[in-house]
Image (cartoon, rainbow, N blue to C red; front, side, top):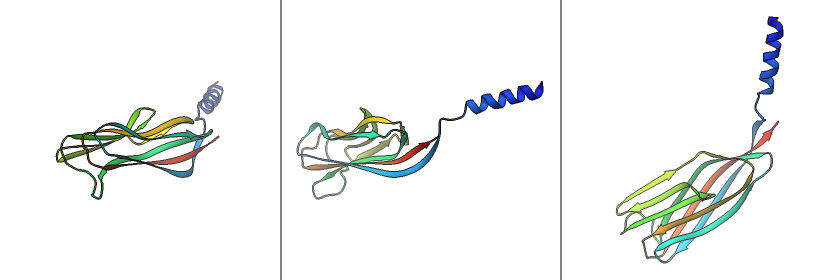
Length: 146
């Protein structure tokens, strides 16, 4: 009787195993850019991406920054300046300045299953001079092996 229960438990546990193993496939890097000559809400670049069938993506990092024309990364100035990287309208990275302070927020790692997604960079600027906006998303792609 104990052997029968043991065999039943083993068969049930085999049925509850994962759907597959992950096998590293490639590194995907997405760069986003834009430029602005005035204050206000902006949407600079939108990319439509697809995670292929039988694959998953792990977003390992996302970052963005604002740079003055001919200068280093913007830190300071008057007012508030924010830039976000969004995936399907959910922010995964933020860069913001307020006076002489700046903050960086990042919501990674993030896993994406197969399907279509929209990655975009947008923001709200109070600065009126020429600036360039940069964003980068680093992704590891894995094959799902049965």
